[in-house]
Image 1 (cartoon, helix red, strand yellow):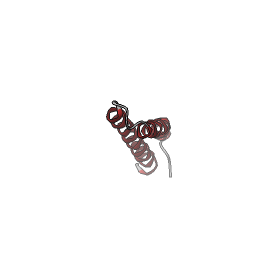
Image 2 (tube, one colour):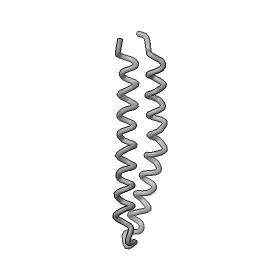
Image 3 (cartoon, rainbow, N blue to C red):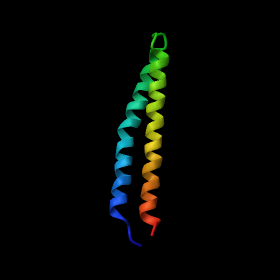
Image 4 (cartoon, rainbow, N blue to C red):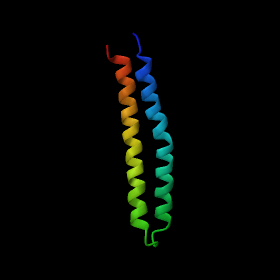
Length: 73
């Protein structure tokens, strides 16, 4: 079984990019729930959910790319 190293590295970069965005999104989400009485609460909540969603998308794309590098001919 041969692995396409270029595509594998691309998938690992996607996963490496998802890690900081995941932590940042969760940190902002936690901060927004601590400040529910602040007038910008809903906007901060929306931004944090979008960041977390982007992190999940990057994880999915990274795992998908790694699988493609391993099992594609």
